Amino acid sequence: MTAPRIGDVAEARVARYLRERGYAFEVEPEFGTGRHPDYLITAGEHTLVAEVKAFETYGMFEDAVPEQVMSRSLTEALVPIRKQIKKAAGQLKGLQDRGWPLVIMLDNPGGRPIPFDSPHLILSAMYGDLTLQAPVMADGVLGDFTGVAGRNGSLRNDHPYISAIAVVRREDHAAQWAGAWHDQNRAQFGNDDQALAAAFAKASHEAPEGDDLFLEVFETLSTEAVPLPRKVFNGPRDRRWIPNTDRTTLVPQVGAET
Image (tube, rainbow, N blue to C red):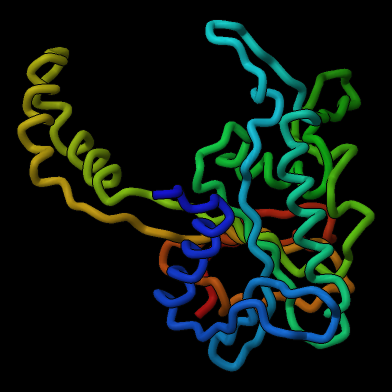
């Protein structure tokens, strides 16, 4: 049996998330633009369009040799993410006057070696390589370092019609259970790691099956895009990054809107 294409797996995971949230959706609708974005989504009274992209590349690791140490710059590491943002934005082009939020959804179901887990690196892919800056105070003392987006961001000067990037996150129920079990039981074993491991192995037969899918949503800084309503993609585990007051960067949203 042929293994499913990674892109199909990503689209199926997004479809599962949408069903679990109770959203209606149409697959590859016809808009008359010559392009067919993956989903036209109805979430309550809100309508939005989403294009899903996955990762099928090993990037700089494509020709890796066993036991060889490899390194790459941040710019090189973020190339696959920036390419998929650009491709997805192209699929959504032409819909910016419809009055709908336009969302790029990224997933890495194949676990490809790209910097996908850190939200700060997603921000770097969107708005520029992360650099560290610190002010020099009047007395000559160096102030606190803060991360600032630099060059090469996919959305820095292009695609102002994109409302948000939504990254698909997945966590096994067993992994959640294991973390909770260690938090509750670690202290009673002190430094006896063998006893801890044995107890964990015995208890792991009770570990639950299945997984959770949730989104980490990054609103864009664009003032031209139709805003993605904060009542959309606001599930119990979903996370969101929103523009700060002067729209110079994104910060975590505190509290979810219902």
